[in-house]
Image 1 (spheres, helix red, strand yellow):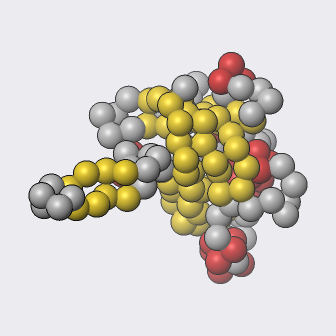
Image 2: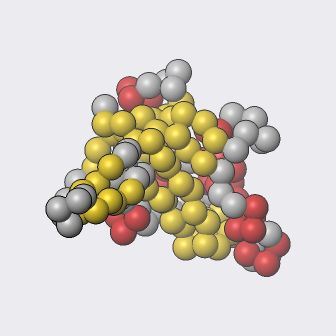
Length: 140
């Protein structure tokens, strides 16, 4: 049974097809991301002429994995489509600031190439410090 409710689906699958990230891939230890600390309700914060700050733009979040086995990471990145795709539209369920989970349509971004260098991988095919960014979050 999954401990957290981070989920993902393709646009074709829709919200009904959301799959828990902790069940992706065939590996002996599935993990969930740490997404709560990385959720932002707005893309940017601006200061108005009156000196008050306000948020502008779409929410965004980052799913940070301290360590993730290669089969689970490969299954997660498959939601980008082709290996050469740097981003794709998906549906996700992620934790937000009030500690609840919410469904969004989002743009998923491939982790930076530097995070997938051999130095970040152990001999047991575990990748360390991998960030998967999601931008343009639209509540569903």
